[in-house]
Length: 124
Image (cartoon, rainbow, N blue to C red; front, side):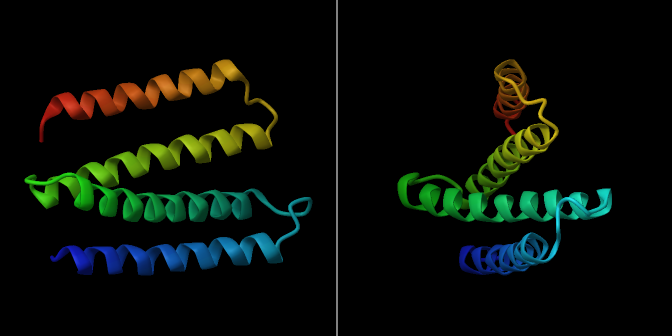
């Protein structure tokens, strides 16, 4: 798979998830929504964030990281996009329940940083 095809595939998927997110935002009343609607909202937001973050991170890595295997750089970009999207999505879910505090955020960042450090040390 070429880099261009990978970016186009991620872009198409991101547009689909972003469209679903937009439809949910503009057509659903949050006061009357069920748990399933909120699950779809958070899932579409999570997938959209993964796509946007992966595209941006992959392009930046392609430009600035020279003499490295592009496939490994894409894997790193995707992993970091997932962790970033988890951070944002979990933070928003906690904030919606009014239980987000500075120490919750600190624990979440520490947990995700530990996962990233483990992945870096694993050397796939």
